Image 1 (cartoon, rainbow, N blue to C red):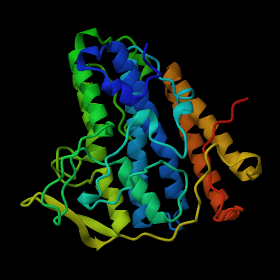
Image 2 (image 1 turned 135 degrees about the vertical axis):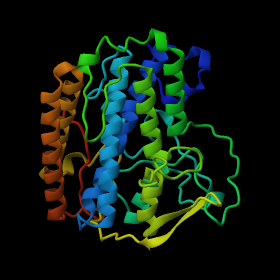
Image 3 (image 1 turned 30 degrees about the vertical axis):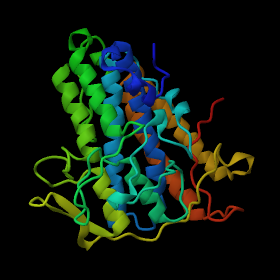
Length: 355
């Protein structure tokens, strides 16, 4: 069983080695990847001083999408006959650090997109713009829409896979292994939810639809296309975060197949200065309000694990209640504005409490 292999190692294996064990290991890694985006996004969301601002509403929508992606990855894993490891899987996630599994978004400064060649995912930020830049890099498309000042995207040999490439390989494995996948065996252990959209995976058609939904919401429905579908109503996450970064609505020119953040103003309020959580957490000096957040977060992880272990809707409803409690606890922590000796204030550190 290859479950503990990193995404980069899984992607380095030739296509003929993408057997059922590879697919299960990849889906567990995908689950952890989706889970890893929620803590940093929630830090940025709840740090905003105006919860009904443009920026807050945009991030809230992305957070809901990511919750849906997490649920889809869990259902896809059950479809292959493997139980998702949620509580245990969180142990693979480190802040500050790379995305789990060795996924590394592109960073080509010649493309005139904000990026950091020394990219790490952190909880907190030196300033809010650096937080949004980090989020844009997490969601960086395989083939982004060029900005008008860039005539063509530079070809660049990649050493690490992008998120989109990883999900593409997972879909190819589902297609190749279709007759080997026991879709109906654990269908009762999967969870269906309408908002965010999480469907049960009962066959290749459902698996294809679900994986394409994850890809389109993150990076766009197709190459050099910024929207999640052909209706052009909803931007993919990369372009949505860009609206916050640049403070302008994204405008796409279908004639030239270019786009830029040059539209109407996007409201970005001031944010609590949650300076980044150090590697390993705050340690024994953390105020009790931080531990309160950890306690609620740990409870939520356990409930999610129980929900996808067969307990179903009741455990999921309990996890949703815990998510609401986590929001209240984090907002209460930010409201107290507890200063850190290093500067800035304490925020949630999203650490598991294991007794």
